[in-house]
Image 1 (cartoon, rainbow, N blue to C red):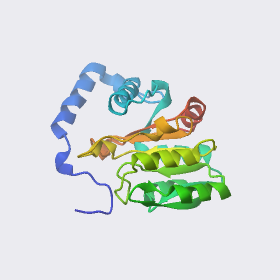
Image 2 (tube, rainbow, N blue to C red):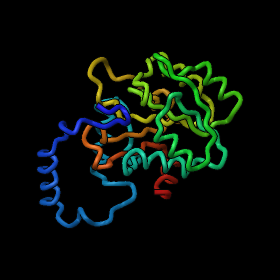
Image 3 (cartoon, rainbow, N blue to C red):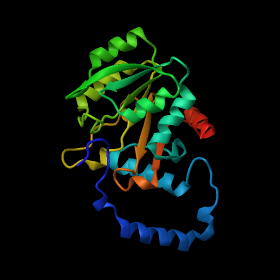
Length: 231
């Protein structure tokens, strides 16, 4: 088993179900499915994702706040394109996800690493980093973090949220692995703790198949309009 990347087990890919679903789409929509569509993404898929957040996380996410992306990696690129200028500070986890570091590096951001430990991100060091800087973004993977594998505890999430409360720093909650939980209960989203400061990134790459490149961003309306324009 290669630990170089978050590669799903190909033996678990639902090939027959995807073949059946694909045929249904062509039978129902025909040539329309091959045409250009709105930048926001397919309305039915966005409605499904909205309902999924209500069912799984008890989050009230409006369909209008969801933007479909070419995997969550495009979401990172769009956020960097819209929000980051040369030299802007970005708080990242240490160790952190290489893909996010590469995406934000394109916009020549200045990284401020904060260590993660068993319970999550160090809130004391995060507070120190924020007091001496004005970071535009803080990037987190709070569920089964890449590459450490840890999940932020409920207490740690609240401590991190308390540190960010009242600041202009936007927290990115990237959650590609949340649906792969084998035991325990789903933990509170930062979107619930910091609704005005949180952007959610989601993906079907780990829970379905990565080859479809289906991801999404959940962002508040003022930011969403800029993301749609950038896309």
